Image 1 (tube, rainbow, N blue to C red):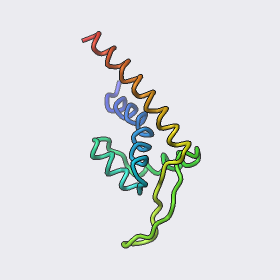
Image 2 (image 1 turned 180 degrees about the vertical axis):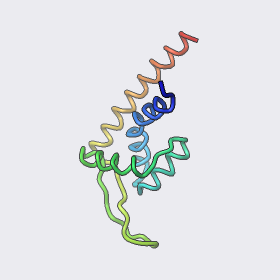
Image 3 (image 1 turned 120 degrees about the horizontal axis):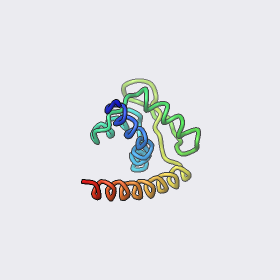
Image 4 (image 1 turned 45 degrees about the horizontal axis):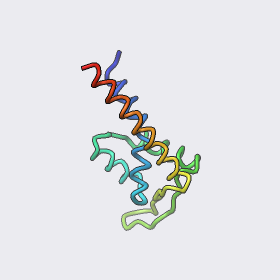
Length: 110
């Protein structure tokens, strides 16, 4: 079994929650989201982020607007929708339940 593959799958499962949490704080440009994730030690590449953002938009969890850039073409900034806020809250509840279950399971088997 490949440990790195397992770690990557665990991180991917939480990427939606983390991305929505960042955008919920304030509208965000994709590279800003990636920087925030890196600060949290979740290394994400653009090749992962853009498909995720597009999927979240198709599901009406995010919207975007264009803003002029001082250093090039206009940039697409993402904001969370009402549906996205509701989805985020549900994900947080699920995360709390999972975290408790995992912590209890690990405690009982150390």
